[in-house]
Length: 393
Image 1: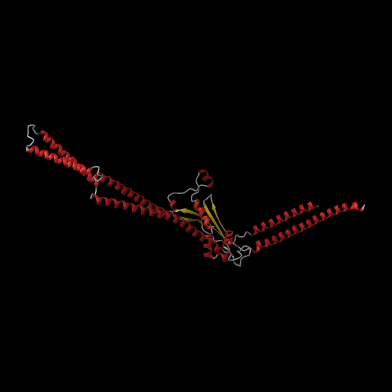
Image 2: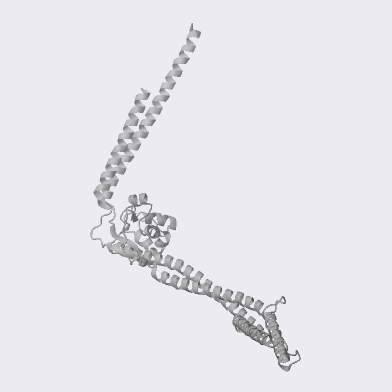
């Protein structure tokens, strides 16, 4: 009888042990939730006085700027909203310049220049500021310093209006304003530096092309002069024209002599002095015509026609090199004018303000938000605790 009760008692003991373990886990969970609630309450109670009383004042300086190019002063530019320009297939004027300036103002290079000018590390890590809002250590790595700086500066590009809004927070009004003024000056200098480098690279390329074409022109000109000196002719084409004219004159003389011979009486003796003289004149003229024609053209490639052809080829090369040189000079002059005109100016629509009242931190707003977040977290924890206890029961 007692042996039959052993399995039953073992099952009851096992179930009681499981229930006890669940109750223990629930009790532990309840303690954890109560601890978390207490931590949140303590954090909320401490945060509200911090925001209202102990948070250090931060002054905000604001400026609105726009990037303009001097090569656009000839006519007005109409800014098209981004949503309309996207449908029209165009973009807001100078949007690329605006975005470049925005990125540069938020860059590490700008932060390093500001730190060198205003010792921002000392300013933001001063012991007179509350330990929560200030930078903990003056010599923090540049990565941490940059992350902290991003929490104190705001540079936004308004795509609709095409302007840049700059806001900087500092622990005193003068520093905040001077930082914004410095950022505007350095931003304009950087934009002009980028434009100058691009324009200078173009001018350098054009200057190199001018030098190359000038050397080509001088080389071809010297080759033509050497050819003229070697041939002993300044203008072979003119010489060829003169030679043609001379041949035409000789042919006219030959025709005249032949006419005279044909007009003599047929009964006249062939040994008559007049006939002999005319025949000698005709032979001399024909010989001169043959000589001049041989000078003008023959298969030897040393005649005047080959000289004229070679001279014309050299002349064409010189003319082509001269045209290239003129084109390169014109392009260089235009490039220099464009480089002088493509200056970029950061126009200030709103000058950097000198704050009178510290608008940061927003004490009432931050205190209220902290309180609401704390209450919301406590409510979530209480709800979760109730669900767990109901499940255990």
